[in-house]
Length: 112
Length: 115
Image (cartoon, rainbow over all chains, first blue to last red; front, side, top):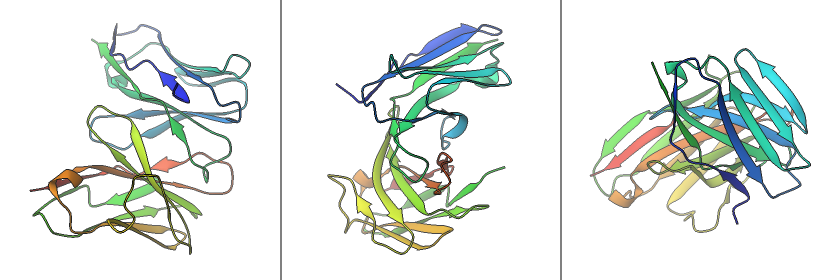
């Protein structure tokens, strides 16, 4: 079993839809939870970052962490064609100076 | 704007050439830098972790003599692919982190093609 599981998709939605992306994990030591967006032929771009459990909102993006269920989610409201990318969940026991474990990434396509 | 700069973005060279890739943190001191390799349609594979002023720690299966890493300052790390061969062709990405608890930021990657 992988430490982090993420549905690879692809996920195709119409413009304006609410998108839900999810990851599950098995390592209870993970405390930092990140979502990165990666466009083709580019490096990952940090979207959201949460420490421990709870919700965090930034514009159209909401990140949720449920440590009791070992489950994290990213919601995208009013999805736009520019949101089409691969979304990677990532987690680590400590901050940015520690090794990060990535999900396999979910490819999202938002259709105009 | 970008907080981690990676250069060059694209390299095409002949087999046997050594290639150096630079990774710079632009507005923070990166105590730790990470080097990843990414194959098409796959996630990032960590190759090595480098701390400023000390030897890099390589992941299992990564040849340290093939992939030389130098982290000479708090803002610069380099990856040198020595005597590159076509099987080394890939997308190489660096990231940088500090001890402040903030997550890693990534460079834009280097697409390496060995002919």
